[in-house]
Image 1 (spheres, rainbow, N blue to C red):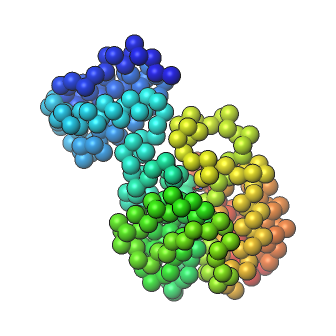
Image 2: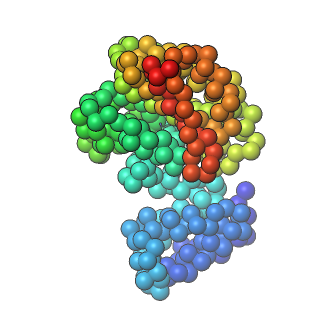
Length: 294
Ligand code: GLN
């Protein structure tokens, strides 16, 4: 809870950039939040980068920006992620619209998408992103490979609205979006690549998660039944029918799920070579299951 006593020192008033940031830092620190989010907020609101912000540090923050900044810092104090406050988040160097109907894209996912890009045959491919959310995976691949056809599906119609907005914004007209609960409404046409970053947090993990995630990110995008493994079971049981002869399935997963997934994939995708990859923090984070390689 916000202690009003602390916040009364942070008002909408005439302040220099430097003082506005100092006050915001102080408030957020006292609330045990992340002060650096305030700087990011200011950079995004002003369009200044870090250096420009330093150069303007003694100038007054314009009234409109000060109001937005104040409002944003109060929301940070209530655990709202800065990306939802701003309405956008970055993925592979591009800005995407986000709201509370979609997961905020994560850096770990960028690493998986980079691997897919590196592995690409260079020929025209048919790619399917299951659980596309804001569409970041589908759109990044669509823009990297304009000749490819990319299908992005999601159970959530609200999420698809955001994905649609993002696809339009980047004129990614090779990205097709469709509402479907996993395989439900997709006919088995052969895909060269299927990718998914499914909900993989187990309900039991809720107690150790960051409050900003629990309070603001959509449950539908976060939690999976069966200790977070449900979607790996479903997808590994059905993907084969949807993959070409040399088709590849990529899936992101939770940092402690590798051994459970080794078992699931050995059982459900026996003809596949399954490799596990680490993220930059050194945790196993995504897998690649390749058809016909064993
Ligand atoms: N595919 C989207 C992403 O990786 C959404 C994932 C999800 O909601 N689980 O950000």
